[in-house]
Length: 386
Image 1 (cartoon, rainbow, N blue to C red):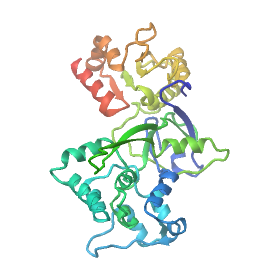
Image 2: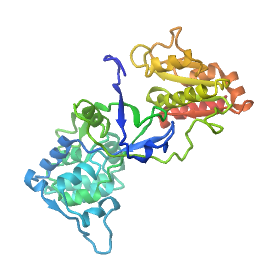
Image 3: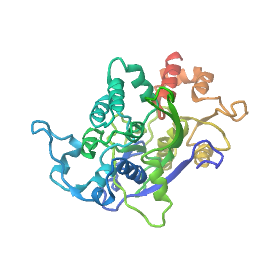
Image 4: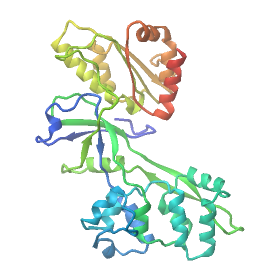
């Protein structure tokens, strides 16, 4: 979906649902989201097994997990392995989060398995009240458990202790960017791959901290990209999420459009569910052509020529009068005549009188989708200011 020169690589893929799935029979709506259950990256799993000195044959032997303490249950995500056997390799691939940032309880346990006194004392110091600043510095670098094990070479914990203490591998959630009308869910996502610098905390006073450059990748998006490049159609496990916030385009029944104005704010891939909204509204207007509810989309990206997602789809909805108003903002060419501002909140401020009238006098419905910590907070502050 993006040009090769774009800062982020965004893909659009189709997931074909089995004809027997209940979701095919109208059990979902535009605005819904679903979870994808993705595995840890195989090279990361193998690197961890090598660091723990576990051979490939041992890693693939079937085992069952048992409670270390009869009075303490296994973590919920591991309990099935007390009744069903599985290999250590499969448990590491599918059940625990190897990319999670180690917390203090894990670091304390790692200290127990250090053969060198210096490594053990350093880990215990990081976990102590006196080592709070060091712990925070470590946490800010977002290391994985494998990074920590490399930083403390004498630490060789049993794999079962790591499995016990690592958090569960959570599914990744994605918005559906199409309206019902078949057995396909479309999703748009940025492929998460990047590099960062880690400071290896050295105990050698003469050497000090050593910086290393490491590569990082998301759990799900690079895996989806790899699957999309294969010739066959692989099967993956998905589950529709409950739409607890009622993130649906309002209707009055019988697919008749709700007369209230709709304002949609979705920069980047946050625009995805609104493409489904526009498809749904286009279908409603075919059934009720006399209706003409107001729809306003505020979209933002870095560059109009590189990462304007769904550009042709959005323009088609403008041309057909499904989308009443479009405010497209481009942070890298905000001065161009095509840009409504640098960011979506700038477009809101530039049209604050109209926005206030729509919200306060015409009972408009406002939808916001995207980064909750960054854009979401800025939009919330702007709306409150208006």
